[in-house]
Length: 251
Ligand code: FPP
Image (cartoon, rainbow, N blue to C red; front, side, top):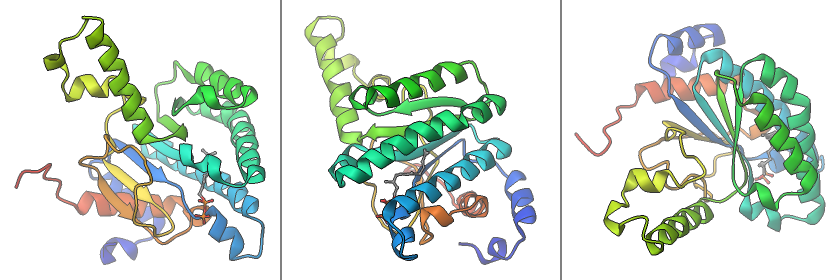
């Protein structure tokens, strides 16, 4: 974190980042809900409840800032291995949060996108998500991408399978497969690659998130646990991002 920006008030920090080019797409691995709850002697689900509040504030801040895309890793394909009660609670929470936030998403011109295997979710969760996708389809402000039952390796395998099917059907020459063609078959088709990837709670790993898309993404890890992550932290991540020199393999 740069000392100079760490000492600014939130307002001054916001003005400073607005004066420089913003990342077009920020993605966040929201981690540490369980530890936040444990630290307070509360059940893990209390951490997830607080996590929803933090997510709401970050979506609002991203919209106000004028980010083009914000991706939140809400449920990974590996999260099914958690205790059944926690998975059930998380699914209910995601369903009720999307429902509850829908009027504000519409009002603030947010367009919702979902990446991940929606078809494997409970019908009621799926219906709620589809309703929100439909209701925000024509919005032109922030695109909020929620990764739900998402796993990057599965996403890549499915893209490769789809390409292989087209080759086998004689519609596509193997030589016509390039990076752009593969990207068109990913869940994120049409979404620019993230410029900035934030991970909370201090873990230094990617956890099967957007493996293809983050090839040149700037990483920013904070020890702050997700429920404590505030708009100020987002602004600080962006301020630090703006100090980096991105070379994309060049010099
Ligand atoms: C990480 O904490 C968080 C999750 C597994 C995902 C759930 C996220 C939320 C409920 C935030 C709200 C999101 C939306 C889009 C409504 P953890 O349980 O892995 O924490 P731990 O590593 O401390 O155990």
